[in-house]
Length: 173
Ligand code: CUA
Image (tube, rainbow, N blue to C red; front, side, top):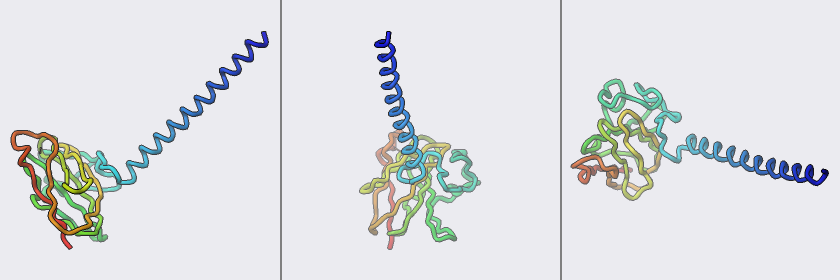
């Protein structure tokens, strides 16, 4: 009968509307996630979102041998193009370098990895909160505004010395 066919068509219309909404949401989610990866707002797990690190492929490296990478000599680099990059190694129970010196008011890209287990990389008084993962590089770019010494704290339980795993970031003029 005509009534049934009408109902069928009405249902189909609603189905299409909901399918359209679901598609739009899926695209929005995809674009948002993609944008967050490229914006540098969040620490990237793959370590190479726009960064090339010698000896590191797809953000991965051998946690037992940093020899071919900049992590062999941790610390700040002032690149030829004027950019600043820092390489930090976390290991039970300290960070290397113990005092990371960075320039005030300049963007610094910090690359963090671990030589053993998971460690946290939290800079007190800032929104910097990353994870140091053995075999992987975590990278993020930040600007320290004011000169001074900030506590660098491991906020990921890593063993008996975890509570003593505190070093510093020294922001210099
Ligand atoms: Cu390192 Cu907790």
